Image 1 (spheres, rainbow, N blue to C red):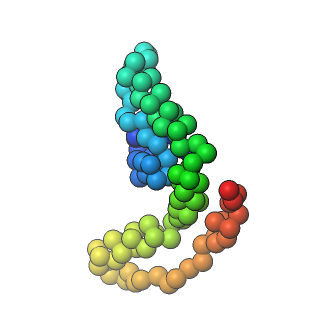
Image 2: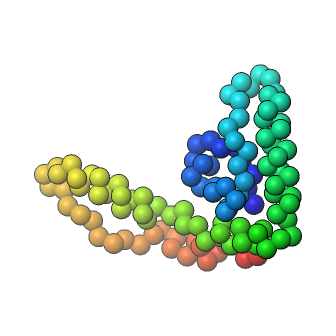
Length: 110
C-alpha cells in the first residue's frame, strides 16, 4: 500500500485511506530536514501499520488493483477537446485497441 507525499500526480492516483496514505506536502527546502516532514512521515507510517492485517488492508489492496491507469479515457477527452476547436478537416477517430489490452490481467493477486 503506497505511503506518499501529497504532491503532483500522487494526489490523483493515491486516494487517502482508499488506495494508500498521504503524508501531506513536504518542505521544498532540500538542504535541511524539516521536523514537520519527519512527524508527518511517522504519522502516515503508523496509520499504515495500524491497517496491516485488518480487513481495511485487504480492501485497500483490492481498490489499488481495480484502478484503471490506461490512456483510453484521457485520450477520449483529449480528442473531444481537439474536436471542439472545429479545425477544418478534423474528424472523430474510431474505437481503437489498446497496445497491451490485457495489462490488468497480468497483475499480482492478493
